[in-house]
Amino acid sequence: MTARVCGPCTLCCQFFAVPETGKPTGQWCDHCGATGCAIHRTRPPSCRNFECFWLLDEGFPEDLRPDLCGIVVSFNEDHASVVAHVDPARPDALAEEPGSALLAALSGAFDPVFVVCGAERVMLRRHGQAPDGDDAAPG
Image (cartoon, rainbow, N blue to C red):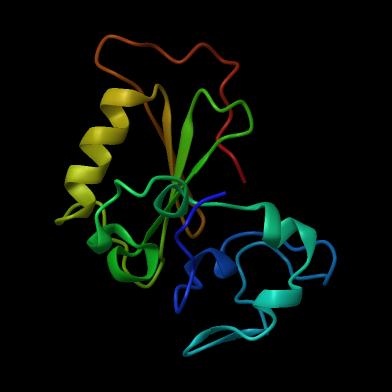
């Protein structure tokens, strides 16, 4: 278990469905507030089991905390690729620092890297790699 905690960060709460509460994908959770999740101690299993890269890796700089940089990075289902969920309110988050450095590091470590921003979905491959048809952008 990681020593980091979400604290005031709730950016992931806008991206993912929470079946236990009926919260759909792409909408803010009703339990989010200015100081964090109002039900963090009793949050459902799907929320409890999710950990973004910032939580997983204490080496991630503080400025890459999702609410500060506008990007939530998580493993794709197969753990061989990652998904960068970009806050639709900050669509340029990957084009400016620290997001651009984060994208470069992710692209160097994972292939492919999926980028999701609202309804926009892009799969980034390393130079010379062609999509093999088996990779589908996560939803």
